[in-house]
Amino acid sequence: MTSRQKDSGRASAATRRQFIGAGSAMLGGAAIAAASGGKAAALDPAGDPNGPPNIPEWMKVPGADTGGQLYGTPSPFEKKVIRNVPKNLKQYTSASTRTPLQELDGIITPNGVFYERHHGGIPEIDPAQHRLMIHGLVERPTIFTMDQIRRYPSVSRIHFLECSGNPGFEAIYGKTASDLVGLTSCAEWTGVPLKTVLDDVGLKPDAKWIVAEGADAAALTRSIPIEKCLEDAMLVYSQNGERLRPAQGYPLRVFLPGFEGNMSVKWVRRLHVTNEPAYSREETSKYTDSMPDGTARQFTFYMEAKSIITRPSGTQKIEKGFNEITGIAWTGHGKIAKVDITTDGGKTWQSATLQEPIFTRALTRFRFPWVWDGKPTVIMSRATDETGYVQPSFAELKAVRGLKSFYHNNAMQPWSIAESGEVSNANVKA
Ligand SMILES: Nc1nc2c(c(=O)[nH]1)N[C@H]1C(S)=C(S)[C@@H](COP(=O)(O)O)O[C@H]1N2
Ligand SMILES: [Mo]
Image 1 (cartoon, rainbow, N blue to C red):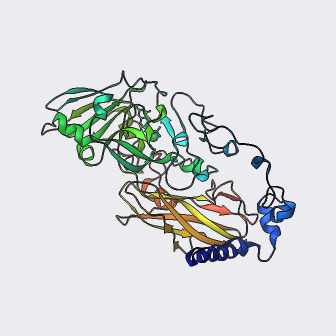
Image 2 (tube, rainbow, N blue to C red):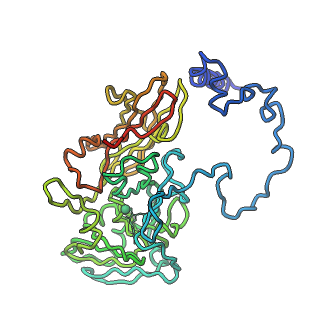
Image 3 (tube, rainbow, N blue to C red):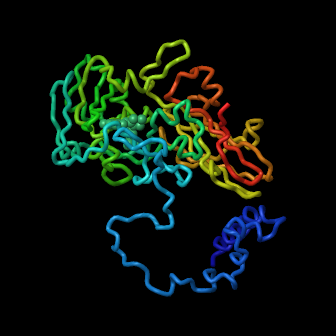
């Protein structure tokens, strides 16, 4: 063993003493045993049939065949890591499912639990039959096949996607992180920059907007300002290395980093280049914000800075002693600059560590080491983005937006910790 290996061995022994030992120092091993299901034998190698040096059952026979599963699935012991289907919402064709944020680590959402929101069900589209038409204020109106789209130079970028009704203003009483902000996910998107394709068809000088239309039964239609189309908008065909899933817009979707999810039109079939917006259903009667003075705020493109602690979070239970507080932060306006944590209901705040690398318009993982003294308290995270914008409390947000708003709620999420260690939503109906 090199001296370096020896050193790292020592470091991990010290780590164990500090973190696992910290909570059990007073109560002894029983505290850990309780945490792992109450079996004191779990800490006793001789009495634990699965603990080394004993040989567990699964080492005594060969395992399953490699290739027995041609498309892999998670361990059968991970059954709760599934999409969250709101119980009170019947899954009509216009429905949504949420990402189980509290079950995930890191910043990438696996494709199987990426949130879904559709207004007319999920169409089944044969990519060989799919076409994208670009017309209107362009020099060369064109109808593309998927093969032609895929011949353009590609890019891959990591970005979050968030529905702007996440959660609606009146829906801040959910139980889990997923109930509250599970209409947020993050993936590596691959496709062609929209600018590349627009340069190819030639924009006319008066092109100001691009109206994107989906090939679903809802024909969902949104108007995108030309500046965004030429900045970082993408035509996406892959997500986390594989082709888009049908629910995410297979075979082709618009992706607008940092914009409200509704504008990233799935199953895109038409880009109509115009000099004014379409004023479609989704940008007039929906996805607008009713303000206290009776007016409605329209075209709220960028999602504001937001964060949530995903562990510990609602319905989980913690033990006295060391607990890592971790969660996710994101902003439509670039990078997350800072996440502050309070463990005393907002009296004092301390900076969390941000997981590197920090990507633009992507989820950012934060971590904060915490020793819980066993007393009831409220914990909360607060994101600041690189523009200096600070995530508001719900009270601060309401003061500006009034009570008639539904969309674009980026308020902080407080979690109560009871003496029992049970974690619950601290937002309570007045
Ligand atoms: N064609 C089409 N595009 C669509 C939608 C839709 O119903 N049809 N839903 C929108 C909404 S409201 C959101 S939040 C995102 C959801 O994307 P996802 O299902 O991949 O998470 O897609 C948007 N694009
Ligand atoms: Mo949405």
